[in-house]
Length: 96
Ligand code: SF4
Image (tube, rainbow, N blue to C red; front, side, top):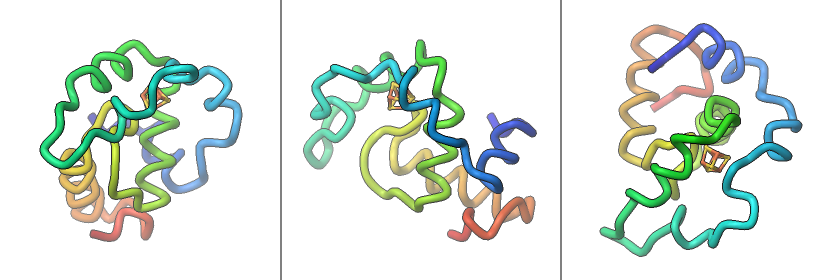
């Protein structure tokens, strides 16, 4: 879901504090970066309860990160989100 807060963080940056509160700290990174055609459900579950979810997603969108689960979204989810942001003219960072 695109919120005004998310759009602002995509444009201005999410800052650095969110990483301290990231729920995935200490998790096996492999669940967020599975092999091709791997399973994303464990990562999505972890992200679902993360208080840094929007910040993490904004960071991935701003950076054009193409791999892994960020903010609970898979690479395909993020591509679709960037298309939606581009349609809205939200930000240059959302360029598809
Ligand atoms: S949203 Fe997911 S990947 Fe991002 S910081 Fe939180 S737990 Fe980690």
